[in-house]
Length: 494
Ligand SMILES: *[C@@H]1O[C@H](CO)[C@@H](O)[C@H](O)[C@H]1NC(C)=O
Ligand SMILES: *[C@@H]1O[C@H](CO)[C@@H](O)[C@H](O)[C@H]1NC(C)=O
Ligand SMILES: *[C@@H]1O[C@H](CO)[C@@H](O)[C@H](O)[C@H]1NC(C)=O
Ligand SMILES: *[C@@H]1O[C@H](CO)[C@@H](O)[C@H](O)[C@H]1NC(C)=O
Image (cartoon, rainbow, N blue to C red; front, side, top):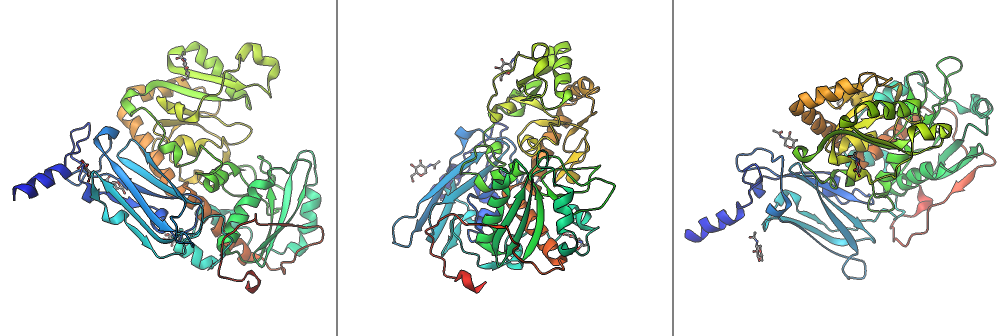
């Protein structure tokens, strides 16, 4: 009896700075990484700590808590499978566990313990084979993939964008599109065909380097599922292309605006970081949640901003900040567009790590050439975001509610100082905005959400195509990189 009481006491010993007692058995667990058959480079899941009364813990010091993740698995040769794992403390009572497979694994087991107590809901057992991202093994139909990945059944942004395209016949407009957007110095466009799950393209324009981003998401998807035959045009530039007047051409773009009619996709930036987290990319929607240093009360009460001089308002920000130095730590890191004004707005300061931005309570999102592609990362951090009103938007912006997920700022920044003062006088509300921003990003902008968006759009799109999809003259095959993976299906069957 005494022993039992003692054991319980030991298990419940972790106390947060707020005096709450952590009850590991109540931990809330969710995320696609719990289902290792969902193939991603970095598979991730979340832990939300809960106290003995069943309330979410909102602040936790690392020293009070010992989370261990043990992964056991074998490769095809019966040796220990090569896996890299990471634990990210989001400093709000939640943690992210992520792991990357470097080869196909079998007998895959994950056990998570908090202060030596196993979390049953975080236990993973799978016979395998569990494939690595690089494995070219499209085992699933698009419907199976969407179902297994638990993607939303519909997207209002996709429905809106495709409303004017109930059917598509490229035979009637393919050449018109190529002609209309034949402005090689300013427009870079790739014409893609996916047929029998193989990718072909022909690009137009002088600067088509960004095709690596559209290639890499399409290659990744076609390694995992059979994408229906389809055809589309991808704008590689930042500016949307299809004017509000004139012929409505279907063009996929990373960024959209209220005065254009492009079909919006996740930006190349968040696409790349979704594909390459635990790979080539350091800043991604998961790492940004686990690398901030200071809890809210230790953050500096100023607006922090760094960026290029890619829009006039960014210079104006420097001007405003000089009149109110106590409210700002802002600086231009790089002069390119307004190089002749460097003496007035410079000197350019060294860029600092994006993670360090969150030493400050208030973050600013000002457009660059188009929408600033950093917004999802800013929202996922643990500061509150001030967002300039803008006609530009990305695939997820329609979810954003002013004063719920961000503090709105007039396009000309004229109310910026006033809004900072409002935030300083309404600290609890501003903190709530910070939390809600992160929560929203966890629902709509994590890697799995980005993949779901692409696949859902490709599905909707391919269903609308009436012409027969053919590989056209001059198109180049986009090849899968070499991989050693042993996939049981024959690619010729597709
Ligand atoms: C606790 O956290 C989970 C996971 O983020 C969330 O779904 C739930 O709504 C939270 N509960 C409360 C009462 O805030
Ligand atoms: C957890 O278990 C290890 C060994 O089994 C032991 O050394 C350690 O003290 C335990 N920690 C806690 C917090 O109970
Ligand atoms: C879209 O999905 C929501 C829930 O996911 C559902 O309530 C709604 O009816 C769906 N709309 C359409 C048009 O299918
Ligand atoms: C502004 O921020 C940078 C980076 O955190 C810091 O090194 C610098 O001291 C800050 N400047 C002021 C005036 O606080």
